[in-house]
Image (cartoon, rainbow, N blue to C red; front, side, top):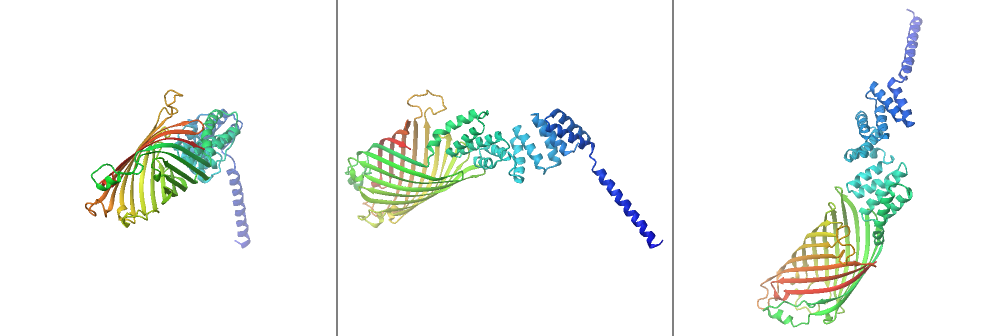
Length: 536
């Protein structure tokens, strides 16, 4: 066969192959019968002819059971008919066939959500959020789920990032953002969110609960000012101002009892606090105060105590439990009988963990340098009280009825390293206390009675101190033979009642009892006071 003949044969084969390819492509573009039914169903669905749409999608699935588009729109149609169970079943089939399809995942999540199966909905919404964080309403759904779990910070993060599809979702997003902010203690911001929710749709069914919640937040929002003032004044009776020893056979203790020690007196207290930073993540405050006590009968024990402090706190969560960590710095200056007495500085990092609505734990470390300025007449340098105090402790609260009632239990270890050997010790402190509110709001009880909402509080502080060195001159009959050991029990009782105009009246009783193996330090002190305070 000649070369030209072979060329004609090859050219003919190439032409036949091209024609066959064109025909195959044309055949591939012809829709299947199943796809025709899907297209009909989508047109009916868009025209809200849901019965016709459902019939078309079911026919498509009879022909092709694994048609993902038909399953997807079957789910959407059942959702439009508010038949969420069948919608969930269809979308679950579609999701098994197309596990990475975000449209299918989102609509299945919505069906689970509407059936209140939030545990099933959450991973689907998270899958969508990871791929399309700006998809409409996915932030709302995740925010609502986190709010139900009381993960308020996480809920707020999703709600604030939400892109609402319409005013209904915009209003719901604002409402739950307000609830989350309120739970986080940001009352003013919460009230602003509720006000915006009310503005978006003044005639929606959500208006009544939103208005009630706004009214509840009103007084709390007023209290959440950035600037606060506390003022307290009162009078007291102190049966041992000079802290004289109890009766004993010790000659030094007996001589000390000749000191005048009983007095009535007055007190005045003012505190200013400013909060320049308050966000869902951070809060900072600075404050200063001054306390004056006047003992009418033993005025050489009058005290003046100015102080200043600053706190920075970071709010986060650990395993979905709200957590606050921060640092407090403070300075105290004391004057005794108009003379310099003490400079005290405190550095205190802390962490508060809210386990649930009932349980709260606070952990604290503390470093406290003390400078006693009036030590010119010391008998010996062993009595120099200048010191560094180190402390670490935990306190746990059991809370009831939004903190109207609570119980607390705590333990602290502290170590005082003083310049004078007579004052260095290692201590163990045990804390027990509680509060009960009579006929608190929401409880049964005669409304309007004068005793309603009276708070009763009791705290017991037991401080057990073992001193590190032999006391160098006590007891006088055998110095340097005894390590001082003290048990100090401080009882505090109070009854308080809030009055109109931000006033509070309180009656307080303090009993300080120190039991020591060196009788000079063995004493009992009782103080009764009546106070009126005002808070702005």
